[in-house]
Each structure stands twice: as C-alpha cells, then as structure tokens.
Length: 451
Ligand SMILES: Cc1cc2nc3c(=O)[nH]c(=O)nc-3n(C[C@H](O)[C@H](O)[C@H](O)COP(=O)(O)O)c2cc1C
Ligand SMILES: [Mn+2]
Image (cartoon, rainbow, N blue to C red; front, top):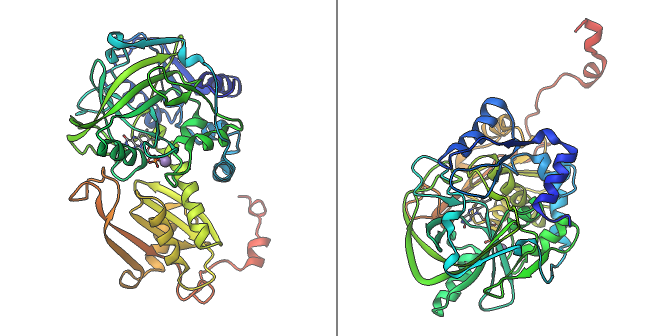
C-alpha cells in the first residue's frame, strides 16, 4: 500500500536518495537529535530526513525531519512544489472518505494492560528547560461524543508515567471541544494517537476548517485513495492501518496535571500549566517500527503546518474577495494577503476573512497584487509607502487566539490587528512607481555591454 511511512521513504530513496541520512552511531535522547537537525540546517543548509538507528535506552529507531522540505511535502501529495496550495484545496473540495479494513501493519505487536510502558519509547528531550520527554509527532483521532463527526490533530504528549501522559489541547480547538463535551458528562474521551505516518496523512491532519469537516477524508483526497482504518483494540476509535505505531488511550474527565515547560512553535517556552491527563490503554506497532519525532518550532514543524493553513486562508479570502492573488503565513499568528482590489473596502473584507477563518491568526497585512508577499522586503515597502496607521489599522480587542502566545495576559485571550497596506483610493490612481521605460528595458541586453 502506498499510504505508509515506509512506502513514502522508499519513494524518497528511489527519487532523491541524498535526502535520507542514516545515523548508526548511538545517539543520546537528551537534546542530541534536535541539535543535529538544527545544525544540519544552519551550518550545512541541509534538510534531510534523519534516521537514527540506535537511540540510547530504546529499541525503536527514530525518524525525524521528514517534513522539513517543501518539495518533499509536494512529493507526498503527488504535486509540483508550486502547485501545493491548489493540490491541497482540491483535496479539501473533493475529500475521499476513509474505509475500514480488518487489520494492518500497525497491529503486528499489541501491548496492553500491565505490559504497557511508555518508558520503552524513545525519551526525547528537545530543548533546554523542557520538563521531560515529549512525543511530538502524535496525531490524535477521536469522535465527537455527542455526534458522528471525527477529528484529527497533532497534540503534544508529555510522558508522565508508564501509562500516563499529559496532553496540550488548545482551548477552543476541536479536540478540546470534544473533551469539554465528554467531561461535562463525567466521561472519559476515547482517543488514539498515530505516530509515524505518510506525510499526506500528516498534512491532512492539519486541515483547518469546520469541526464537521473530516480530516480523514482530506487525507484520502491527498493520498488519492481512501485512508485505510482499523479499529482499536480497546475502543471503537478508528486509526490508520499503516501507521508505524498507535497509542490507544482516554482523556480523563476532571483530571489535570502539571505540563511544561516545553519549547513551543512560537520560539518560546511558556512555562508550566495544568493540562488534561491521558491514560494509555494499549500500544500497538509494526514490526521494526520507526518512532517519529518532529523538531518543534523548526522547519519540520513549520513547513508542515503552513501549507494547510494557507490553503484554508486562501479559500476563506476568496469567498469574500474573488480577485485574491496569494496568501502566505510567514510566521506565528501572521498572514500576508495580496489582492487585486477592484472596489474600495475589499482589503478590509480580506482582513475579516482571515481573522474569521483561523483562530491562531492575529496580524493580517493586505497588499496590492503588484507586491510579492513571498518577499518580506516588498511587504515592508508597501507598509511604509501605502499605509497610514491611524487610518489603515483595525484593532479587534478581547478575541480568542493561541493559548501559547506569550504576549497575552491571559493565555490566548488576545487583541488582533489588520493592516490595509493597499494603495488608496486605488492602485491605478496612486502615485506611480518609477521604472525604466519599457522600450528601453526591452532593448537593453546585458551581453551587448560585455556584462
Ligand atoms: C508538530 C505539531 C505539534 C502540534 N502540537 C499541538 C498541541 O500540542 N496542541 C494543540 O492544540 N495543537 C497542536 N498543534 C496544532 C494543531 O494540530 C492544529 O491547530 C490542528 O489544526 C488542530 O485541529 P482542529 O482544527 O481539528 O482543532 C500542533 C501542530 C503540529 C504540526
Ligand atoms: Mn478539526
């Protein structure tokens, strides 16, 4: 089947073998993996998939940095790198529902009851000051306790005992909503976590949309075939049959435990918080399974999450402003939009669309279509030369944002701002940009001048 991590690795090995590095020397789980990945990027300008064959203290080989290249992510969606947004939108528009199969490689080994021991997994420490070992590449699968819809998301798990972890559920997001419903009934929320999946599944898990939208069907849309699911051993939760590893669990009602500090995607560590508690009921895995890690806050994490975000934001802006040209998420909580503004006010509609479509978004900058939003210098230029702050900045107070934003006084209770950096009253009527006359531009050929 082409929907396993190993099938994808085979594809990478066949088509771009230089992008996989195997490390046979034993690695210390304390910070060494993160150090290697970040050094490869910073000092060697390399972003390979890193496979660590021997990690001190665990029998599982570790795979990390899988998503740290846009072209590798494109390969996972069978797309050209420049068409990724369109490919992702097509999967959102034409989702393929999953199918349930009898069994799969994720059931090769089944561990339940007293034999469960999370300390047998790699105990990876990522950044200085982290409170403990974290599982960073776990994708949650859960069902609405009050309905039929399913949800998937990444949720970090801090290992707290042989069968216990904490979980970070962003307040206001979908799994948090399911947990609130279950908790109000005094019930645990059955959940399962897939670790080690094909990157199309990872990208689908991060789709932003209504709670009624099924990420599993977007995974199918990206894979080009239905995602194959198997039933958990200890609950009715359905999980990807071809995952490397599954952690079957429950989120307990009414229980909280200290979690963090943890080096987060914002580039900060917010410190310790009281968070929900996960009880593990079973661990199942493929024979020879890779344990997947994501280097939080680095490219492996950021590239993976921005593609689904940009697709959703493009869709939302396009519903309001049909002549939108491009959307980019250049950093945490930030969105740049370029539009061909046909009517006054459309820039502000674009701002409202972005802030309404993604809870994390806090700052939106809208520019005209002659500005390349993938070039930060051009955005800065538009902000400086087409914008009057007293007229063009809109501020919304007391809204909900990311509970990991260190600038908020109360976790996640935040102001938001939109900046209209389009030319007013219109680009056509604005002071013209200077340029070399086109006939001269066309005529001049560097070669003719010995250049
Ligand atoms: C590597 C990685 C780790 C993440 N960790 C968390 C986390 O611990 N808690 C959380 O709420 N969201 C986390 N996210 C973001 C969510 O997975 C993302 O916002 C998702 O779209 C939420 O799903 P929902 O829209 O169905 O609620 C993480 C994302 C990535 C890529
Ligand atoms: Mn969702």
